[in-house]
Length: 362
Image (cartoon, rainbow, N blue to C red; front, side):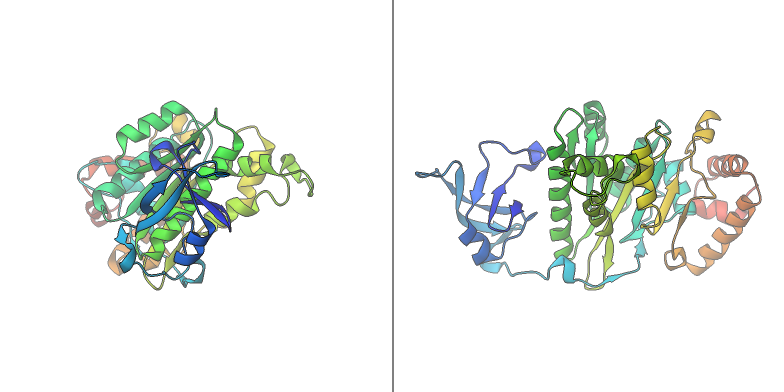
């Protein structure tokens, strides 16, 4: 359900990436208020044809909300009223099925926990989308119970098709040939959907590519009445993308929303640099990709000294944490490229991270 205003809503089709079409059904204001319906909920029921002044189909009778019969449905605690806390409960990426070196490297350098708010900081063409794909595949293998959503904003159509074929999860997208409103509409509805799932005490992971393009979209929708910052960014334009990113949290009452978003740098655009500077430090995990590593044909091209997770000691077992610290100290003593080259060769020489940590870097 897409609820752009307090007094009206429409049922959109997930298969169409929530694109407004004539077949969408309107949800009457009285129905919204009677059953406390909110944007992002899955609602089922009977439709009726439009009457005199109505322009679309109308939801005439509700039968289910979030798959539950209406008689069994009860209002849930609003997402904004849930208690946020530090990420806990590890989202392990290492697995025997994909055997991804990228997944293993992330586990060692910037572990993910339920409720993580992470940035993948990347120049163009250094493998950020491939890394996001590897992370998604690993989550599907290790944590099938997680509600995994990939959100692609202002993306190339072929990239969307590739991800849809490679990763078995919910994928919502707006392509670069669509208007700015569509980029924002899809993102806002995906966020509302994620919030409703957390209210049901589910663990949700949203992989966003990219927060930079989403921020550009919001900036282009601004009426140009506010203060213009460097790079042509209006001062109020980043409030909503920050709200999107800031929604990530681990919830004390049960459930979590993890958001891992890519941020573009070194694009030659002053606007992109301003956007990154505004988001830098707002997450509790940052993973930096380095063009110099790509030029050396080293993958994954992770810059190890700039990559970290806050309060990662809460995610590791004490014995594992002790050995990870030893590994990091050895890497910190080396130049960044040599450090990552050493880690990659050790990952290739061992079958698991446990084996690597027990043996140490060689």
